[in-house]
Amino acid sequence: MNYWWVNQRQTHRHEIGEGYMWSPKRQQNGNKHFSYEYMKHIQPRDIIFSYANSAIVAVGIAKTHCYSFPKPLEFGRAGIYWSNEGWKVDVHYHELVVPIRTIDYIDSLKSLLPTNKSPIRRENGWGNQAYLFQIGEPLALALAHLIDEQTVTLVSGNYVADISKSVDTIDLHIEDWENRIEESIRTSPDFSVTEKDTLVKARRGQGKYRELLLRREHRCRITGVDKSEHLIASHIKPWRSSNNDERLDPENGFMLTPTIDHLFDKGFISFENDGGILLADVADRDAMERMGVIGEDVPTNVGHLRDGQKQYLDWHRTSILLK
Image 1 (cartoon, one colour):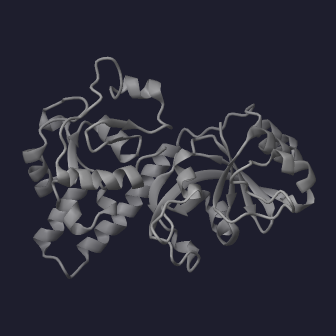
Image 2 (cartoon, helix red, strand yellow):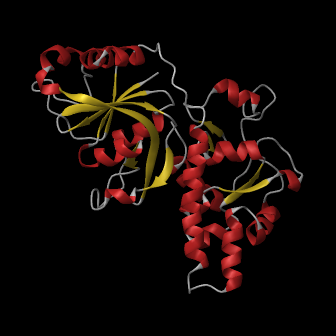
Image 3 (tube, rainbow, N blue to C red):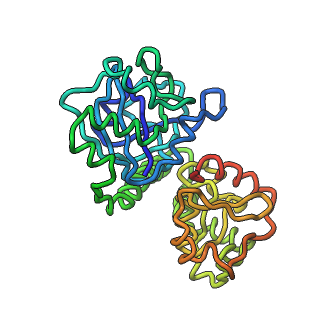
């Protein structure tokens, strides 16, 4: 279990009320930021302390790993310069009846603060500027004792949250996102009926996209399955994140078995440009072995990749692969 401190400020009403965390993937200048990268480290059942208006206002349990998702509409003009697509984590929050003002307890907390990347300043308890911080168990327990016994039990790991349906929730969120994109394609005056049909079928890995991809990819890169009826025409840069040219580009894809497609789409695996298999740190090794991704008889390299695929994989490793 890991412990996190999230500075929600102007978005806390939306994030706590709707049960999520959301951050951009990059800074406005395109550079990485440690707090956005931390989103990829969150695991289900991690504990999250929500900080807003100079106080801890809620405690949450992460229900999911992070996943790529558009900026919430309810943010309005908040983060107006953020890119549209960022990282989202579903969270079950418990709002505090009495928020905990850190400036009132800084003397007892400052020795427990991280040496680097601290969420608050040790000299006065005011918040530092960044979205997400990782904190240690001693600080998490100290905060829990300031809140109530239920939170102490939670932070101590003596309470196991039921998050069994959370993955289904992710799929529903993504389905809704893709449905909105599909509807915009179907109602657009810019495409013929045939063009609309081609773009929509590519969402499910069907039609022209599948035909073109099968000419280049004849088997699953990991399992070696080469029967097309058992393979999914999977996008490297997901259909929902691609422009219309990318949605139909056969360089933007692999033929994968359903299990490998799931792992690739959710960011648990990716490929290096030399074909090496990458596993996210948050991926369960036992599960990966049972699903045929790692093991004594499993290749560690998926073979030669074309230049076009490498360009899309650069995006996948940055914008989909978890940490």
